[in-house]
Structures are given as C-alpha cells and as structure tokens.
Length: 522
Image 1 (cartoon, rainbow, N blue to C red):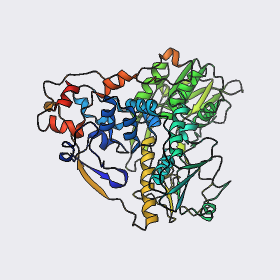
Image 2: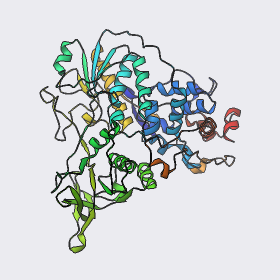
Image 3: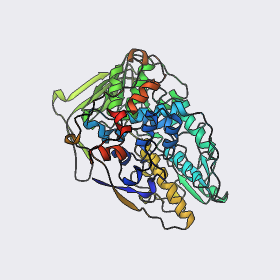
Image 4: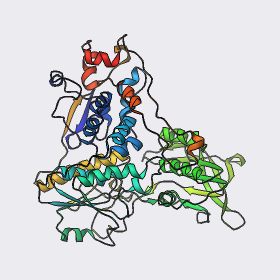
C-alpha cells in the first residue's frame, strides 16, 4: 500500500543502510511499516540492526537523527510502530520501544558538540515539554538560536512534572534534556509568560519567531454535588505533588474517576502511597477507555480494580469530615451522535444506583489548557480552549507566532507532540527564510507482508519480554518497574527484525536471501 508522508516531518537517509553493503541500497525506495507508523518516521530498521550487531552508539546515533528524546520514548511512547510491525504475521512484533530504551540507557553519556550557528535569527519557545524540546532541537540543528522559557523549576513539561518515576525516572528525562542543551539550546526555568514576561516582551528582546508549546496542565473539573468535599483531589495536582516529593499517606479505599492514562497513573501511585484498595470508575465500556491497554493491564497486575459503565452522580460526606462514599448511576449504553458528541444513556429503576465507600477520590476526567498568560495577546482561541492554528503549518492568527502540541490540538501523545514540534520548527524555518508556508506530501509504498508469503524455512522466535519488578515488590517503591534488557537479550530481540525496508524486499518479493540475512534469521 502507499502512504502519504509530510516532507516537513520525514527524513530521507543520505547513506546506505547500516548493516548492508551499498549495492542493496539504491534498489529500494520503500518504507518499512514501522517507519510509516511512527509520528517521527524514525529509521527503526537501521537502529535495530545496529543493536543486533552490538553497536550501541551507532544505534543511538541513528535514533537521534529523528528523535531527540530517546530515553523518554523508550519508556512512555505509545509505539504504533509495533502495531504495524511485519514480524507479527510470523510470531509477534519486534520490541521496538524497549530496544530504544536499551540503546538510550547504554549509549548515553557522550556530550555532543554544539550545532554550528549559521543563522542570526533567534527563536523563543514557550514550554519545555515534548513539542518545545523537539522544536528547539530541530531549530538549533538548522543553525538558529533557540531559547526555551519554562514556567516550572525543572524543564521537561509534563515529562518531569507529572509522569510517575516508576514509569519515567527523572534521570531519563534529564539525560535527553542534557543532550539537547549540549547542542546549543538555552533553557530558562521559573519564567511564566503573562507574569514574568509577555509575548510582546519577547519581540522586544529581538526574537524573530515565537513557538507556544505549553501543553495541558490543568485538570478538568467534575461539577457534581459534593465535589468540593475534603479528600477529593485533581489527578494532575496529585501526581505533580508526588513528583515533587510530597507523599501524602493514603488509607482505606481510594477511587479514581476517569479512564485515561492519567487516571491509571494516579491509581498505581495511590497503591504505592499505602491505599488498601484502589478502584478506577469509568463511565463508558472498557474498550472505550483512552488509557493504553498495556498500562491498564499493568495496573490490574498490581491490584487496581477497574469498574466500567458507572457515571458519578454525587460525592457523599462521612460525618461531615470529608468524602465517605460515591453514588454512581449505571450506564445502559453509550453512543456518538451526529455532531461527534458522546451520549450516555443511564439505567432507570432501583438497580440503576450503585454506591461505594471511598476514603479518598482522585478526579482524572481530562486536562485543559491554561490560557491565563495568553488571553491578552490577540491570539484566537477555539471553543475547546485550544489555540487556533493552521493545522498544516501550525501558525496562529498572529504572523510569526506558532503553537504546537496539546495547546493547539496537534499533540495527543508524546510522539505526536514531538512530531508537531518538528512541523512547527520546519514552518518557522520557512517563515524566516521567506518561503511560503505549506505542507508538501509525497506517496511512498510500504512493504506489507502477508502470511502466505512467509517461507517455510523461517524459524519462529518468541519476543523477549521486558524484565520487570514483581507486582508485590513494585507497589512498595517508586523505582522504575521496567528493569531494561541485558545486552544478550537486546541483541537476541533485535535479531528477530526482518529489516523490511531492505531484506524483506528480497525475501518476500524476490524470493532469495543473502548470507548476512540468513545467518541472522535462520
């Protein structure tokens, strides 16, 4: 099949594939499905092949050609590449995300040389989350001066402020940020736009373009009776407090209201803070939960209980001292209307009510943008509260001001926000170079393997699972749950790769196998 890829977010390699001799390379102009599925269009086959050869630094170098946050993405990426991996028709997909974590952890430590400064223009970036960091990285690599202004005391945005250490340790985030700083990006923390500095102030300081990438840092409110009772916490505030080291003691039964990744992270955090029971209550079906499937399964393995089709109706006080119970209505059905709105139909009658005891409640029903510092800047804001931008170029209604990531509804995931940051950096480069802002697309064929194409001589090999802390041990500590591959495990897993962009083109379309590939796959 063919897939359209924006040239503004993809890279074509100028060198032959790492594992192959040059005679293979010119014959192939196709994409592996993992590359096509990745929001950053990373060169997955080449870095996996480098790991298979034991060349960790080479693998990390290949990853960093398109991904400035390998330590982060090796842990909390939603890895759509694995969903499309051709190896799944043989046994199971390659563990692409975990191999990235392995390369980042083993290969980090070398300080990069600053990128050459070839442009006099300076760009200001508001926010140091995935979108802001990626845009800054790309802009300094294009020769610009890039400065990030971060409201928090520590850079990283949501990566540093709210994702629990057992999923994403602070040192992993800092390793990626240190590399970006080493390339020449400047980061100023404790600077809040609208309070310490205005956008007009940035123009006055000589910045020629501005990127707003502040993310979503306010929890959506749940306005039902009793929502102001003591013992009810917004999930983001809860996670941020824990991340800063403020560890509240939780006892008894804790309920999380919501079904996204924030809800699941809050539930697993509550277990680690001493809760006897942790429950997630979600309004729709389990299949509708926006949290990643593997995160839900990990939470359940640790003891979190998931309840679906429950719509919270009221929080009830216990002896006037705080929340004591939750009254739910059971949901009969859920559907999407013609305007795209999710409509719930509640059950009726005596069996429709469901009341549970709760010693604490954490609200995780979504996040919204905080526009308090931008409302007087003539920027257009949509009905959903996001900055309005041209979704192809990410420029706002104000020339020279761009917005990327969740603040402009161009993120959704960490790598999605990173891809938006890359697109914004490309648009800023065009804007400052006097090139019309537009998104040019190309169609390149992906190599898709069908089960009937698999040769009889292929050996099935089980995927190497990630070594993890045992659940009973994990819930007692905040250390990282995933322990990482050992060298031999990473090499064995990498050797399962079909290298679709190169080898699969011969194996499945031409029917022959070179010696190098045969020694790896057979």
